[in-house]
Amino acid sequence: MKKGKRNLIIIEIVGLLLALLWISPFYLMIVNAFKTKREIFEGVLGVPDEFTSTNFVQAFIDLDFLQSLFNSLLVTGVSVGILIFFSSMAGYALARNKSKLSGLLLLMFVSAMLIPFQSVMIPLVSLFGQVDMLNQVGLIFMYLGFGSSLSIFLYHGAMTGVSVSLDEAAIIDGANKFQTFWYIILPLLKPISVTVAILNTIWIWNDYLLPSLVLGEANATIPLKMFYFFGQYTKQWHLALAGLTIAIIPVVIGYFFAQKQIIEGVAEGAVK
Amino acid sequence: MNNRKLSFWLFLTPVLLGLGLVVVLPFVYGLIFSFTDWNGITANNFLGFENYINLFKDAEFRAAMGFTVLFSVVAIILLNFLGLALALLVTRKLKSSNFLRTVFFMPNLIGGLILGFIWQFIFISVFDDIGQALGIEALSGWLSTTNTGFWGLIILTCWQMAGYIMIIYIAYLQNIPNELIEAAEIDGASSWQRFRHITFPLVAPAFTISMFLTLSNSFKIYDQNLSLTGGGPYNSTQMVAMEIVKTAFSENEMAFAQAKGVIFFLIVSIIAITQVYYNKKREVDM
Image (cartoon, rainbow over the protein chains, first blue to last red):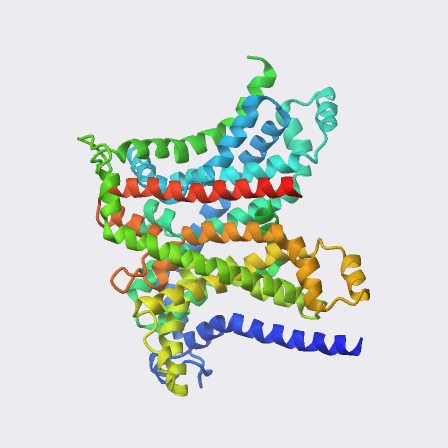
């Protein structure tokens, strides 16, 4: 037993060292973001003598950070909201209707997950361009199209745990289909809604390629703005690193408050 | 149409419109135009399989394909090894267990584009500094050669995705009944024997899931490729996804890029269908 305990301590130390290695990129990013260009040239590993905040001020302004943060929040928030609402409705309808057609539709949604983005992006941009939809509204609609497959699949799976007798009771009480869904079913699907929200938020928030094809510079989301910004400051690491630090702050805050749900949600999404 | 049917279709209309206009229509549209000289707006001539024949002759596309396959194979092996090792580590009764999970998973939440930029700094400046301090020449000039670009991408991918694979393994490791391990312990099984004969067979399904997840993820990588190496030097670290984007939007060869996109779809589908097949087979076996 004693030997087991000592082993456990050794494993704990190995784990902590590995964790240090894992966060070292973030450490290097942050300390060097506080240095001047000259100090980075002199050495990248140590802490600066004097923490200068000028890099952050300039990066904040050049990233137009409040605007890009707002753009990212808008696109991600609306897309995820719409995805939850419409996918849960669809998952509910498909699960309650046991016809052959319903099975076929589900199969169609699941098969669509196979199509890589690069196989549809050119006609997609061309078609949406022809109807003047290369803007935020068009982008949000595209996220509905790309995100609904996995979301419907997850909702459909979760519906097996929701008894049909609940629907019947609601209908007898005079509720219509939508009221049954909205007041009875959707609240019961809350755990899977959290998973759907997390998976789609991570993906849409970080997406670069689609917004780069659809949005102009004025509506740029954080990854898009970061790309322009980085191009502007190649080899000026003090500014680039300050910009990168600012760009990941929203994610770190989100992770801090919801880490348990995030890790559970991601596990659920992957294992299914 | 009765009421029931009507509500069924009303509930499905928004997602059917979304999928139809964003995925199905562009897919069919693209498939048709890949057989023409389409320039993104109009097509004048039907070319038959010409684009597809040219694509197999395109040295850049073939190089990207080779690089992607090699990258995927190495990434799958390392990621699964790392993911399982981390999962075994954090499922021991450690005080820091939750903290470790949080740290290992963290890079997975940040976009590949941003992570690629951070690692560009590490490979170029930090590696160089450490190399000079310790007199290790191999640490200088990272990302300036094909080889260091390749390993740079591998390191970045492992660091970013290992926490994700870890979580999948944890889900399976936690399902192993404790009594089983204890019984084996009482019977005198060593920790290696316990791992080999109890843990490993029981997490085997996780291995299948992770293998295909890492395979399809590494095959489709774009952001990390763009921000870490940009495909350089001389397009030698360019992967398929990036090559297609470049053919389309830098070289403006829309029909040709679309044909590449169709081939890309076929490859990804074959991978995924193989996965479904193996999963089904395993379920029958068990």
